[in-house]
Length: 174
Image (cartoon, rainbow, N blue to C red; front, side):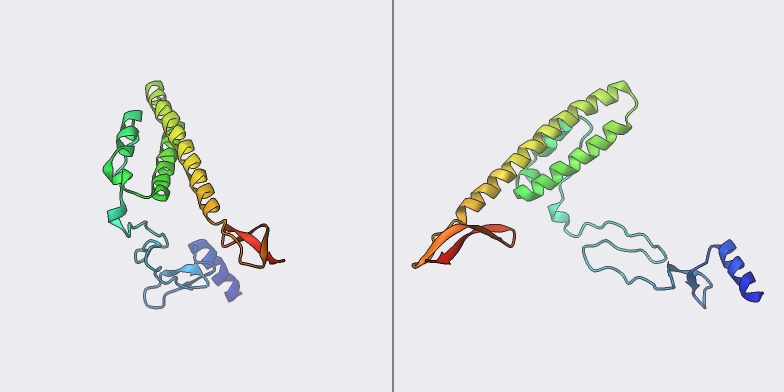
């Protein structure tokens, strides 16, 4: 009978399945009482007493400030030296980020004037995103062409094989 009342008490208090700290009486973060260790660098930080992780920018030198309120803001962002000096992969990430934010803002907009402004911005960033995808494919094709080396003496090429995500000639003995 006492066990049943303790279980009901835990259910009512919301501590069911959680262990409590003996000193403070507070429940621990996870069911079973296992406390998570702080994450390694680059995964975000977990404030004390919170189960949520916060985003932290581990490399602020790589940051590009962005604006996406209008098409002109996006054009200005993509024309900045801080954007142009990044690698193609980083530029693609930034373009994808802008696309996601504009798409979300467009979906939530109620005012017709704001919606039309965001639609123009969305159309522009979608074109830039497609151009970025095309460039990525072009770069991957160039990379693939570079990896077509000749086989050693006594070997002939029989198609291609994939290793570590890249294609190489499949060289077999004659």
